[in-house]
Image (cartoon, rainbow over all chains, first blue to last red; front, top):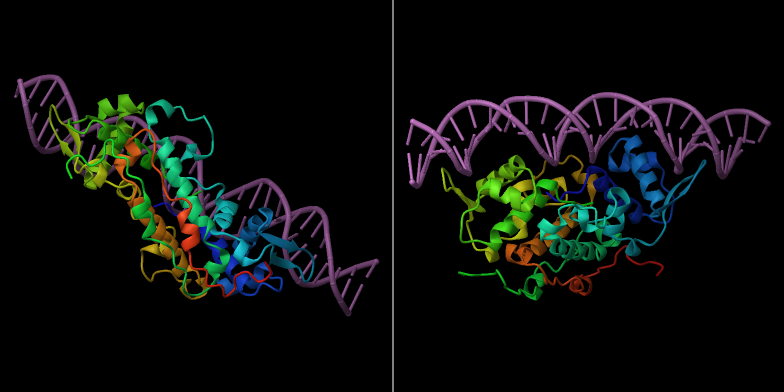
Length: 158
Length: 158
DNA sequence: CCATATAGGACCATTTTAGTCCTCTTTGCA
DNA sequence: TGCAAAGAGGACTAAAATGGTCCTATATGG
């Protein structure tokens, strides 16, 4: 389903929580309570986000997590990549050359372009967008017109 | 990684193969050979594609599979949905109301919009595009400008 | 009636995922 | 100086998803 993992989902929710009150540090247990998820899981998620540089952590008492950049500068891509690794629809989107089907595959290039388009889309969705309760308009119509349809095999009978 | 499952990957490759020679029926074993994948797996994939109405099958000798529509009318969305079910980034993208985190989540709406944008993107990639060896230009730049950035939380210090 | 196909599932092994827990380190403060 | 409150890191487990195979039934053409 091209779905995000639960962890990524959690990450987004947690990041949004923090983004709504970015001045102060948030602890794992505080966030867990707010977001209504078990503390250990939230803790784990925060560690991952912190290791990827999206959060900064302070240890010890009065410790916690803070955004390392402003919500407008953290993208959906960042969050997804932090939890799931590099974004790409197919195995061969990043790993280079280790696909033994390359000769017979014949669609790799195009999938990669599609991946790229999705990545770009996710790059322009920021945490600021996600965190806010309402709008966020994405150009769901635009792409359709601008695809160049080169028609080699295309539309033979329609 | 927002990745397609292997099966979906196979499905795309197989569909592309068929699209390149759409006039005649293709058997599972023939396609397996062409695409360099084990026959049972290809067979399974074809069955799924056929059940979802993307292929039409004829049984018996001289049987096989044919596209049920022209390559230009079969989209990447169709293929993905045939194997993985409805496209959506989060659980709650389709199932309605059964997420007990709804109140604390606060990002569901926006994720759904993003999902929708991706779906639209995949709707405009056709099998004809995938099947052809080269071009396929997607508007990877466009979306950026057209996102309306309503900035509530956004950009406080940059 | 036989050979060739698909249809539909059952089935299994492996991997991935989600989630917990334990131990160690850092830090603030009484 | 010692304790409590935090995060860091990683080991571990249970459950689910995934990929892949195989078997039986059914349809079709010659």
